[in-house]
Length: 247
Image 1: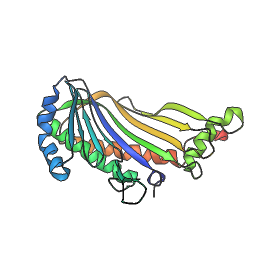
Image 2: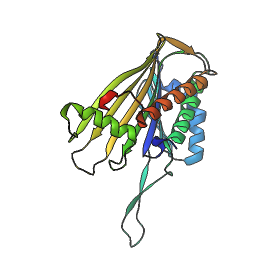
Image 3: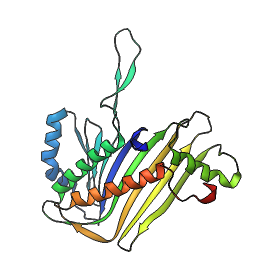
Image 4: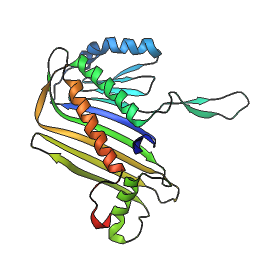
């Protein structure tokens, strides 16, 4: 099992396009069958228009769709509810079962593909970037090898463990002229001995000459990105980066 499936982690997936100032009502009309389907399933799906060019859909299952003139994103978060059994203390519980990150990511990408296939049904759009994000909470007592190694590497200039860390590093992973893969690494630890590590891995594929992507091709592109992002997340978590003699 992957290290990322052993820690609490949630995904966000996004596609970025060259700007096209379509009104939010255009997105709403294209997604109306999907929204109706969600309403029939849970009866609690919410639709909002934060601005004239923006549409948001929040499902009862924890998925949030955000569509604008330049991007389409799907984000998952666990939703909580307060249970108040008679004669007992109130307690919070998840509205949906806790799942492995890789399963959640696959579901999130399925939502993204479904939305994009509907939005791109009539004409292609120039795709300029794809992003896949893993937001993780890690127990400091049992961190994955790569996270422990990464924090140790950051502390090397001082020769002793860091009391606190709040770092953001952006690295290029691959660049062949057309595709540039990069990853934002955001890591934060507290001063308390038992505090958790908050880790965000924000993998991105920037496309130099935007792909004029059609509805029947978006799944193929997203599956490639899913595979490559997970491959890098795994490499990072296992501690397989080149840290040199100080790693």
